[in-house]
Image (cartoon, rainbow, N blue to C red; front, side, top):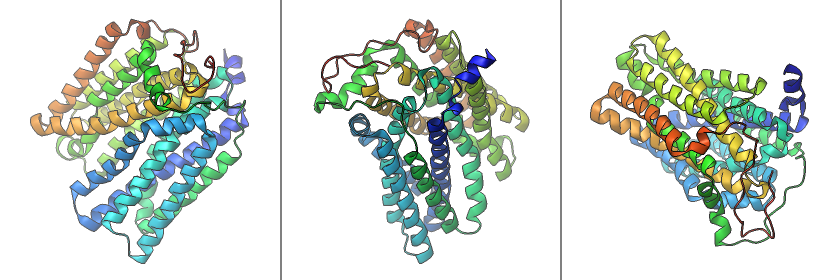
Length: 424
């Protein structure tokens, strides 16, 4: 088993190593940018509402561009799209730097710049998702997905802390480093050589724009996996209420809030590293359902806890359980989607992720306003467990799923291609 794992390890392939480093640099830059923009916006306006608008400015372009970005990722060079997007983010970071140093950065200008970053990320994310299967052998794809997830989780741990430390020297320092990271990521991708040639779409039309959505709706396993993850995060968004728990429930102060924010990412990173070394064997569907149920149970434990160590442990388990779901979902998308449709299906996947994160925070806040923070978390955790049980009934094909790469799904006819679709 050890020899087999070593032989298929994605880190043995230079294209994936470069891809992985680029992913780390890009994700780290995004996390740092979010912290710096939030601090600077609040310093400029003192408005919590404006902080919410910053998040909305990033979210709206992603939703508005979902059909377009998937279409672009399937028609054009995915590596080139990701590189351009990272370069655009680097230029925006330079504008932030100059505007801060020059004192001409305004509230409205920040919204506009953040919206450009959101649009850039909307194109970058599905392009990188769709590029991943081309930089590793098929046998190593599940491990590569776990390693890719670890890059994002590492950025979530290191990025905010690093930005917080450097912000003491001035926001321009953070923005300058963000520019270096994003431009560095773009440069790294230039050295990534995909294995095999991508086949672009031959026809373009309205039907091709919606074919990614149609593909997901027609495949019960993938629809079950994506919707399960969406509702789990939507209901179990306890992290949005961490400031309240740190201040009024656990009474720890800002330092405790920092630990609470890092705990899910630490658990997720640990699980990513485990799956990167030991990929899932059989019972992948049951593992995903069990992971979502465990996510709900950990949320309930966090809601009931009055001890900081127990709360940190619950959040760590929550992050680890979430990663199980992420790896199964991402692997299904990449292994069971025809390669010439992967950009459009990845865009739908990205929309599910973004919607669950954003609406999950809104749901937690609204429920907390009605019932209080602790009941809101308990309701969300119990609801997540119920959803996992319900999905096991509604999607028996997902529950019965054993090996992720066992029998690729039959693709629907894609009007954007000539002849039969190419399956992985």
